[in-house]
Length: 538
Image (cartoon, rainbow, N blue to C red; front, side, top):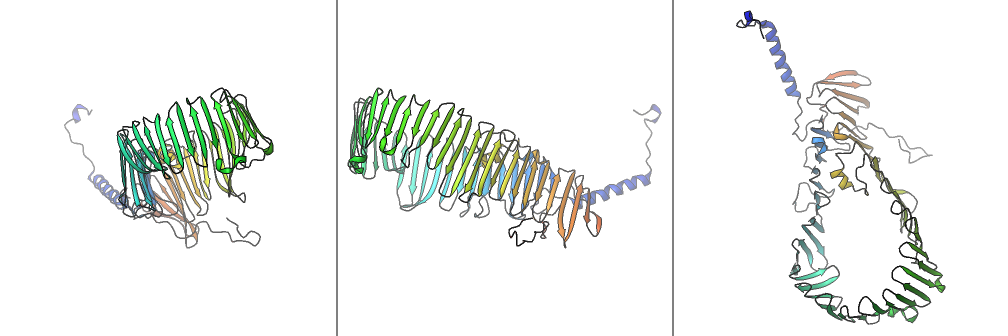
């Protein structure tokens, strides 16, 4: 408050000072206005205002932006072109596939995918197959078929099924009230009315009819003759393949299987459940007592034997000479070992410690898990060269490498196996640090929590950003290394060259204002190959 004697007296300001202040304010406003970087321009320069909004030139070309700690993201392969991917995480996102047409759905020839609350919802558009689902509400698919052209199928609540193809065929069902369905799973046709009251099914020349399924039914055609009056009598016979009968199911069974292979390989089995059962096939014999707890089997000719005592706690088995048989030792839950020609699997203190090896025709896959803290998977080709690898030290870190591509994240909040799409939508709020590398293209991307620190480096430029406070751009111009620095939201900027020294740059609020297009000169010059190492890399 002013003293009483000054309350009604005007405060005089030197007019010269006032004019200078006005002129300075006007000049500063003009400089800032001329140097501003628009957040909404496609081709404007870089600016980093994380966690609110950042737009950057991406390593390898194109631009990317993120807002609100990374909740909203978008990417463009061409700085002035259409959006190739966007997301409002964790709610929804859209991505154009590499061989697709620009623009969002529903482009006529576009190949794209989108997600809604992944993994509950996803839609994809492809040349031969397109699909969409949101579980458990609906599932839709359109695909090309050899017989009827493109076929569309819709399954939705409350139990509705609809399908149509270009040849004029169609299906409609409202389960359990009525329905007529064609080409479903392995069946050619299914009809039902008030299921399980009445239903029919056709497959491979056979027609099955059921009343009050599974109580009364029969199958005829295709060499099969089966009758069911369940649980009193069940009989199934396929000429030349099997003959199976059950009385008072599940108590009494007898079967003859694999008839077409000849008597030496025909299987004969019977059981009075659960007391005792026996199987005979050639020199093979097996016995079951108090199914499924106790059993033993042997085949002297194949040097095969097996013992359950009791199942599933103790299981011992020697595969012998059978090519598809397995060696197994299980004392559950302490130790288990399973081995076939294609697979070997060890377990200790189930379900906590697992080691697994899968051998395929052209690759080998090794995995080791100490649930839930450590998981690792490595795939190698027939020449023992690594194809891909992944490990997770939950919840501290995880790394994925596929060929020349690699991604490392510090903090991996979810304990299950790595799914890149799931992490894209759900892990980002908790990842403290991520590093992505493309070795062949010499790309390296870094991101801290909230996008406060970002780095985009490739063979042409290295750009680093600390939100608003600092940014450094390094590249080559006419063979000389150039370093451009921006401080305090682009208000202070300068340029340094090895030969010409340092020069100030115009302000570029909110900074740093580096151009969207990257340099064309190589920043990291290649190391010439030598006769001793023709594949030498820098």
